[in-house]
Image 1 (cartoon, rainbow, N blue to C red):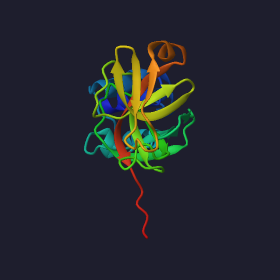
Image 2 (image 1 turned 60 degrees about the vertical axis):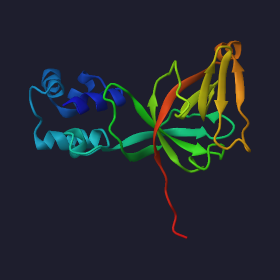
Image 3 (image 1 turned 90 degrees about the vertical axis):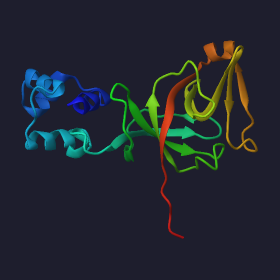
Image 4 (image 1 turned 45 degrees about the vertical axis):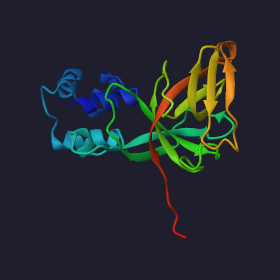
Length: 198
């Protein structure tokens, strides 16, 4: 069960800790993760509860899964990205099982009309040495985070918004990138938007 290992790593739980919660040996859990043994339906339900997911996600019948919401990311001026889990948001997205994911709330309108204040975005954690001009990234600027397109230039990084009337492109020199720092911390992979009746 590759997804069991993925979820355990997402939640930063060791095999020993998870085995204790399930009242099984670490060896039994290891056999589940390697696909040598299949957990019982009762055990699958326990795992689904622990990881805020469904049995269908665990066994690969669906890609719908609830990812942790970690805070807010600015689509405008950078604001602090909090590290406490505020809740969970469901996305229908097939994850790369060797990556980590989290959800951030969007605040601001520099990325409109594609990303609106109040949206939630699923972010694949990790840096990116060669950003694509067609992707949107979560970018750390000092102790804060923002969501922008990124252009890597020989002398630094350019952060670019969709809505340039609100947010002009902002260039950070290589020195500023090292000192602040300014770095890509994730890639936006999916969007969740609540459409209100009106």
